[in-house]
Length: 392
Image (cartoon, rainbow, N blue to C red):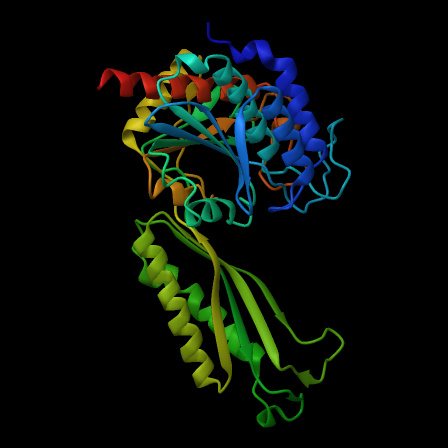
């Protein structure tokens, strides 16, 4: 008999609250990992801890496997949510990764209880460093999935706000979110007296011109029917007390976002060309770095059908939202395997849920979504393997 996650609500709520109280950053997650592995040990689920990547656990056996991925890291944000289980260590689960981890733990408990009924192997990936776009890359680069015959992959991500109440979700074929490229531009000039600029090389001037020129690429060079955003989010130069000194260096950086790899590549190429041209014209030197990247998470049509059928069984409603503009390194998995990235409602009708925004110190997310997400993971997993079995 399959366990309904609604019967695990108390466990799921306590699990989420425990994780929420101890948020950790990037791939330094000793408390979080310890809590997850303790539960895996109690459930007698086999696992290994992969450096820089996360915890890779398996349930069941078989020639074909399904990957369930949820992330565990938090953000360097001081929490102001007012929840009784708020973090007090200066970090915060402001992106809901505590909820993601909890739903995967819940799915693990249920799937382990019916392990002998599974017609394949379930791979549970509790990921490190999603916020730094590093965990999935480490998993793939080191070949940990190469011999597991992964035939599909699923990831859930919470979405707060008044309209996304528990029991709602969003899932459509095609892009579920945007790609992202983090970039940094360093401009080197020559220091000079503010009254004798001609004796120096002004990196601030060059940086401002780079900013202005690149800002026009989206409007002038990208088809208006396509989605693309270039955001320069910081500009640093000089000393705030040095009113009369042209500095040696200026630095600016930000992100590029789009739904298509070819547009992402074009924007990066133009960034290098514009920065280099302006640097040469202003007699400065510049260095452009793409620090990390992740493609858009693209939903496979068939995986969408499986999730929608399972969601219907769970009594969930598909809001069919446009792709979100945030990014996730799960996109690296969706480039390789048929995948699905599902937005699941974490809001509610109460006042505290009305203006929920990810990465906000004030965001509150609704515990009531946890059984829905757990059931959705389990139901989709069972449908996935039933279909494989029927196609033999």
